[in-house]
Image (cartoon, rainbow, N blue to C red; front, side, top):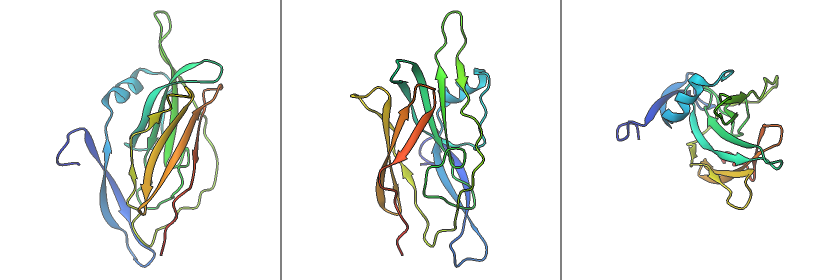
Length: 179
């Protein structure tokens, strides 16, 4: 992907298995969405702890109360450990942007900073994560799905835009590392 398409950028990782003493370098590929990157330079309040994450969903969604928002979900795993879960603020982040009008600039709705403890590990086998482009649900304007594969097992994240401009992500059947 990196050699064949300039829209991808390298995402450096330091991976190790439970039997390795030192991590070995690896490089993943992440799709660069230049329009989103341009928008984040003009939207006040935009901030993210993730470094060069991949945009895995970017689309308009409408909350149950009728609020139209641009929803962005990005994935950026830690460089040296791994969590099979999609944890907002750890390895993924979500953003909602209120569209601009003639009299109002776009508004970024910050989702806050959470203090939490997440168990990350060095998997025995590389997780080989592949995330497919998220899809809006044509029957529910607040809902979207993101299909992904870890350790050869597939799952789907259900995303939902709430009336308070937050986005929830829920895994249907979280993949587990098999021995």
